[in-house]
Amino acid sequence: MDYKFELTEEPAQPVLSTRTRTPVGNLPQELGKAYGAIIQYLNEIGEKPLEMAFAAYYNMDMEDLDVEMGFPVARPLAGKGEIKSSQIPAGKRVSCMYKGPYSLMEPVYNAMMRWINENGHAPVGVAYEFYYNSPMEVPESELLTKIVFPLK
Image (tube, rainbow, N blue to C red; front, side, top):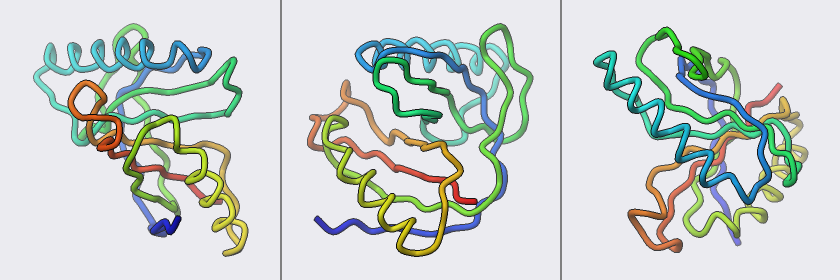
């Protein structure tokens, strides 16, 4: 399959997020819990997410994922409890828009890693997924996910 990769230079992006470790089987519940808590907090302080929800994967151990879940925001905001003020660091990124079920994203990741290596780049070790819609809104075949690898 042909994938369209985009190489960009991006500024730092403030976010509100939570970070946890979880088996992949519990990921949907963890994402729902985190996004719900952050949206509730944003409503409390009269703010809105700047863009769609994201998850940052700091490892790919499906039994013990290290994942940060949150929303980009317009400016740095104070956190509360488990919700932390953080940022997606500035720098070079390669991204690819993927349409389809989450369970079939592995070939996109593999193709992106090949592209990164073939083009003389190196990933920093974290992968971001930005979720443009949700399985509660559309059929799996219509899910839109932007996969992003920050580069060294």
